[in-house]
Length: 359
Image 1 (cartoon, rainbow, N blue to C red):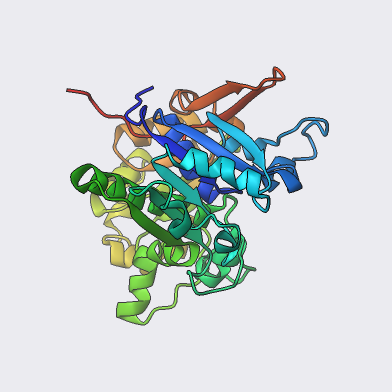
Image 2 (image 1 turned 135 degrees about the horizontal axis):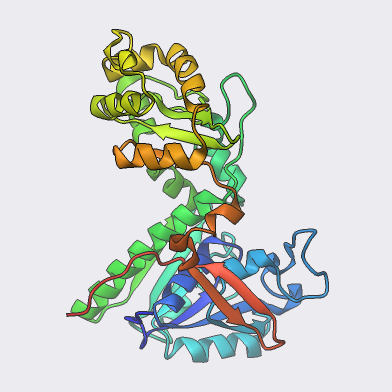
């Protein structure tokens, strides 16, 4: 594994998902990451977030393991002067601090940027808040999904809203903070100066609304629940069942791909039908198009149709469960293992999915 941050020391004053995901990013790239956990609550709260199938007598959960690879944990009570002093000593030789305290708690515990930079003048401090520095409101991911519009948009047409099954707002925020910290590290390399980087969950969520936000801002369109369908493209997100009962999803993005789809399905007449010749017409007539495509997919097994459509460069995918995902070689190579002091073998996926060449 490449280690560009081998000389970097990171102090993680963060818990749950967003902050720890940033800490693990640095750990994966070679940094020494020291995670400060709350001694009074037996550490990061996610240590106790166990599935019913997980052993009750272990000290950690799978959830905790997902973003805490390669770190050294210290259990401290930051209300105690002696424990705070331990952190201050670590900060003297640290490069980056990651924090996600509730509003005002960093100052109360004397773990805020203004305090810590007195121990390391060029310290880089990355802070995560829920709704910004001036808000007292606390939040978990589903709250942010609701407030930022994701929850309203997600689900089947005429159905209830549906939460995304991963705490995506936390992960998007982690990426925003990583970017800010990398800019701060570049600035320090150029000027020798430290930085204070602050990111909110809410702003990160809104920044990720992309085309759905622009559909409202420019066209006055409030995105509605469409299940897997796309408001601008068809057949995109349409689900079909194969002969062996497996689920597939199409992502046809242009007319050529649609013509190739019809060729593979041995129904070229569909591509000539005036109702489906252009994307605009396919969006308008998407329901009847899907009805016509359904029996065509039933002629093939999942593997057969995947191979044939992929060969013709038609975007298509198998709808895989988690077991099927990790049967794929590309997913297998992203597994990180770690053996704990008690001999427990833990697994998670990398947070770093890029690679680069050293010249």
